[in-house]
Amino acid sequence: MLDRSAPLAIYMEGQVEGNVGKMGIGVLRYSPNPVVCVVDSVTAGRDAAQVTGVPRSCPIVATVEEAVALGAKVLVLGIAPPGGLIPPDWYPVLDTAWTAGLSLVNGLHDLLGPRYSASAKPGQFVWDIRIEPAGLGVGGALAASLPNKRILMIGTDMAVGKMTAGLEIYRTARERGIRAEFIATGQIGITITGTGVPLDAVRVDYASGSIEAEVMRVADAELVIVEGQGALIHPGSTANLPLLRGSCPTHLVLCARAGQTHLARLPEIAIPPLGAYTRLYEDLAEGCGTFPRPRTAAVCLNTFGLDEAAADRAAKALESELGLTVVDPIRHGVARILEVL
Image: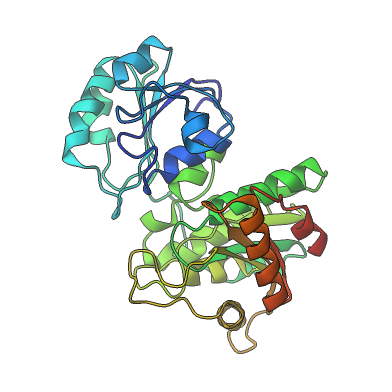
């Protein structure tokens, strides 16, 4: 468990302006920990807020040694390469960080504990996030009997903003005095919140049960937001059925990227019309009447890269097309989604 007062450095070598740095961006935007710097030799000398657009100022430095000099105590691996494996050229950097006394937070599939834990100094640790929790069982659709509202964040593709949108709904709900809980299901959300289940590290037999256990743990909440993973139309995604069965959602919130028509890494696969896509999720969740049918409450539209006017036009056009509330959770906030709920 990460001490929430521990100063962090985020390792993002070559990816501060890249497309696989979502772990680092998420920690930078949402972590309650102090962030003393980002490590990236490509953009070193600049401010992270200016480069990323995340409103959290900290220097970007070129080396781990500079991070230590600035007071960092923990190095967070802020890059999520395809496949979730640690590139071999990272290990000399990690060796340097460990020798310098930094603890390591690792959300990738390759574990660092076997390499480093035996030589830990007092207070030094490795947190390998992608480890299956102990004591899991099979799912039983127990969440279907709960009286609360349960939102499952769904998406048209990988990395379209499901976690970000869910955290924005959670944060705004708490600010309004709603008893809300956020169920993290991936490395970034778990790093930020300190709880959750790394779904892609759980054996298939226990995947639904692992989500169910998290939802039942917070059964007294009025509103439970479940972080989504992947997408039904993505051939590399297997998380959606366990998420649907484990949470038995009452509502869905669709996350999509403005203007995207095909999967980012599989451009031969087209994204279907969004109205038909949400009905597919609702149909699958209902299971021919076996479970209560969820309602798609809203769309969170990722308009990154558009100017304000273009972002507003995109949201309004999709809202008119679908007859649903459409917002960019970062630009517009999520107050309108909470009103729908």
